[in-house]
Amino acid sequence: MPAKKHVVLLKSNSARFGGLEKYAFRIADAFAKEGAQVSILTTHPSQSSSPSISFYPIKTSKWPPSWRLEQFDKQVQAWLKKTKADLIFGMDRNRFQTHIRAGNGAHIAYLKSRKRIEGAFKHLLCQINPMHRKILELEKEAFENPSLRKLFTNSFMVKDQILEHYNIHPEKIEVIHNGVEWHEMQKPFEETKDQKPKKLQKLGLDPNSFQFLFIGNGYLRKGLLSLLTALSKIKEKEFQLSVVGKESRIDFYKQRSDELGLQKKVFFFGHQEDISSFYQLADCLIIPSFYDPFANVTIEALAMGLNVISSKFNGGHEILTPQNGIIIEDLFDIDSIVFSLEMSLKKPKTEMRMKTIRESVSHLDFSKQLTKIIHGCE
Image (tube, rainbow, N blue to C red; front, side, top):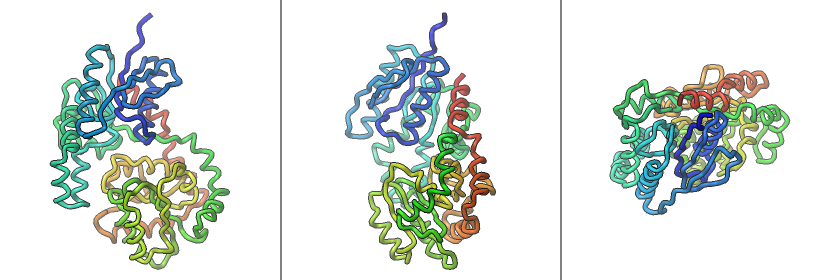
């Protein structure tokens, strides 16, 4: 009887449970279901319900961050020298792996995006910051490593950025868009009609107003300032905006909202563990990001039947069509954002439109996208 294939998965921080962490555990489970023995190397090991998945702790210092990255990489390489692996699947920044899922995109492109919104001086500081320099060093060595067999990106945007900045053969890169828990979201989707009035009342929102929704951690990169300015120019339609997500300078954004005369139109809810309620009450999700490899909220909102407005700097815009969303033509032109908002205001949530939008992403169910990744490793 042949031995099981040994897959080693590299994920430095698995303590949080964001989009990347979710993908890490799902990928490990998918490999295990294909008959592989999976070893997860991480700084935060946990328990697995599958006997085919094992966690191996990698100890690193908390400070400085750049040294933590170097420590993790060196200890991973030392572990791999002692253990035979058929496939090494990386999800962070390590110098060597046979397969990579670049869920964070290209860091070099991210830094360029910061220059656009924060200015040349901030960009210069990033260039000399040890943490950013270390990430760029690891990123270059990983993408250009001759032993790399396959690099998965979650958007064509990221693929193009990697080809622009790094010496890697295009055939090594495969684009597989993020998946969504399409079937799991069926129940909250079906409950939207009954739940929307209750949610609006609970949060003190107007049931007669068009409901925009903004979800994101770090409001500057996600484009909230531009969105607020654009909303202040809309006078003829009644609307409200719910802002959800973590932000260290949230008081600054509240003040700016007030200065723009949006006191009764913009509501800040901060971090929320459960955002399904906000999808239920909203008519449209807007993601005016300056850089997002593929914002998960894009596909989640579509799976909940929401019309989506996105910028071209969010790789998730690639799954938008005239039937389910709007792409902002020029994110640096406020009038272009205003135009997109006004177009969306003409498309309030209806039962028929919701079903059409939800169906448009049924082919991106998590299980289908994971299968593509697993088969792409063969």
